Length: 100
Image 1 (cartoon, rainbow, N blue to C red):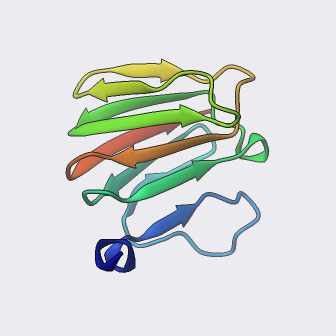
Image 2: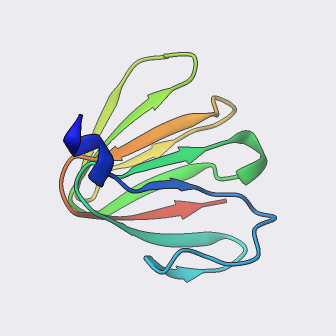
């Protein structure tokens, strides 16, 4: 329970006016995000992201409804296709790139 209080939550909303400080670069087609251990990212259909790749660390992915969990290590990538929404969790400090 205490650990949950320390987690940071991120929701990517294209209509948002400001980006979180841990997004190191963002453009129309790619967004790079640094995550701390146990940090969550909720990707929704309106985000239009089609792929995630792991630059550093380990990421756990699960779809909603659950369509099978995926663990990605450094260098790994996963294509969402039309399976969004997805929840991503950093299993350790990580950096990911989201591509449209």
